[in-house]
Amino acid sequence: MRNLKDTSRIVVKVGTSTLTNDDGTFNKKAFEKVVDVLASLHKSGKDIVLVTCGAIPLGVAKLKLVCYPSDMKVKQAASSVGQGLLMGLYDKAFGKYGITVGQLLLTKYTNQRDDTLTNATNTLIALFSHRAIPIINQNDPIIVDEIVLGDNDALAGYVASIVQADLLIFLTSTDGLYNKDPKAPDAKIIPEITALTNEIKASAGGTSSNRSTGGMATKLAAAMVASRSPSKTKTLIMNGKNPTKIFNALKGEQVGTYIEFDSH
Image (cartoon, rainbow, N blue to C red):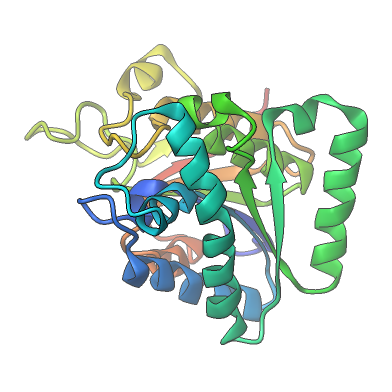
């Protein structure tokens, strides 16, 4: 079912685990790998939307905190400081390729109000028309739920639906969704999902990182939301440490976990 040859609009969500080292510091090398791949896709003529984490780790470093904070107020403060730093990095990195970026800070309420949804949609369409890459993050400093629940996954699903993307890609810390705990010796990747069965739901555990707030369950839910768009968005969950495999996936090769729900 991996027919991605004609994919023209892609939403990519990159998680904190992909953009940070094991000690919680920002991983600039991994960051640049992601940008290089997305810039190449954009240059090939595809519309790219990036839903990104990473503001909090940058803010933690700038504020000279001794460790990743557990206190919500401090997390929000770190996000506030890190958000501008993150966009500065993206602006500089994409700028090397002559690509302009635009920032949207959204919340879960954006999709619940007609006026804000219309404004967000119009902004995204205008950015596409000017060949700019929209870079989206949750507005963490004012919405506590976003940090607690890992709603960047959910946001990516809604954004994919809003822009009628052909493909939603989650860049994660694992190679895809496994049939059991990935640490188990007999764990195997689930290569394709066509229905959200109880068995699939049971395979989706929580996050294993204290810096990441999402898990496979939130990604599956986002994939379901995206699949209901007029474009019937497909989803790919793959390892963000090797983003060049996106090119392999677009050729139809086996990469990560591919999700294309049966008509519903």
